[in-house]
Image (tube, rainbow, N blue to C red; front, top):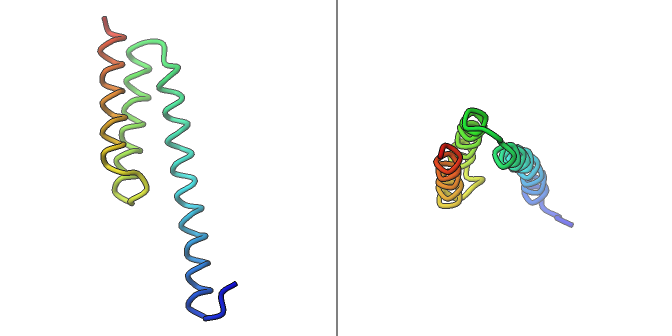
Length: 85
């Protein structure tokens, strides 16, 4: 356990950040599931744009690596094309 006042404050800050990041990651996973079960192009478009927006926000706050977000957005685009055919 921390002894310094600043160390105790660091632990509190880390816990708060972890909780915030956990909610964002959970939201992204939920949106990804809605994308994976989308049946038609319209629902895939709506769910995909919501997921892409959430990923962009997560990049901005440093929760998700930019390459991971790019990879996921690319997969959404490929799924749209495949479903449209």
